[in-house]
Image 1: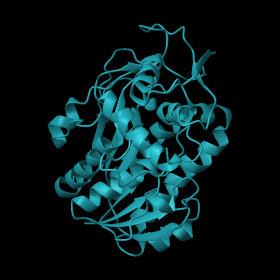
Image 2: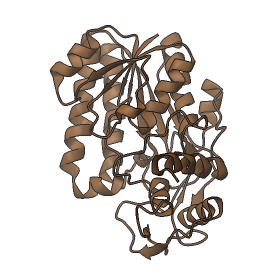
Image 3: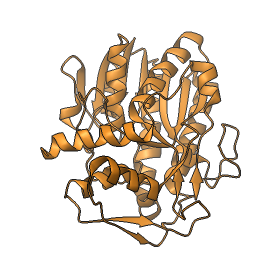
Length: 325
């Protein structure tokens, strides 16, 4: 298939591109490089520098003719979304509507969307399955939920087939070491841990140690980015061949606390990694873990790289290359 990957120069997007290439698909990346990196681009692919807030850019891209597209261009920092909701409204909601309108205009009706476990909010039970009530606790999660609703309407009205992949905490780097471009201004846990390990930061903050968890810090379901990439490709092939939309959770079902992740990073890197506990951030649920049985049933998908040692080891390898340690 000819696939347009919107946000394909970013952290997750570049791993999706690599997996699509491995499966023989022809890929073009659409990215404004605000957070994506030229380093993450493959010379074998087409590249369009464009912005999802510019309708002309999107129409020019979709006008080249694609069988499917992957949308990975949403902003994703939950904490920031609570402070700057307008930023997330404009990029995530307006930008996505621009994408959908351009796609249907040019009859590109197979879509994979990187959604989020943030659509669920505080869990009523764990692990969370697809039918769990949706009550986002942060504005980022609210935007992702609204995008899922937009896609459902575009399916009814325009024939769009979509896969909404709700994943939990993306982490790790390409185990083969081909991709190691580091995120700009990372907000997720593991990159921040690595910045401390590599000396870019003196110490890190752990937000809250009074949650009702085994050590008081938040529990999250960390999933390796290569596992996520394989799910994106499997989902794309599924919806395009079966003409059936999907909404799936992706995770391991095994949660690890923030403190446990930091301690594991100390063990694997041999670094001190100074950390201090500070007040909770608004919008952070105590525990999020996924039930991914449906992804296994529909796609034959299972996480292969999402053990703690691979998550941390592959990330540390990328950081060591960048910082030449």
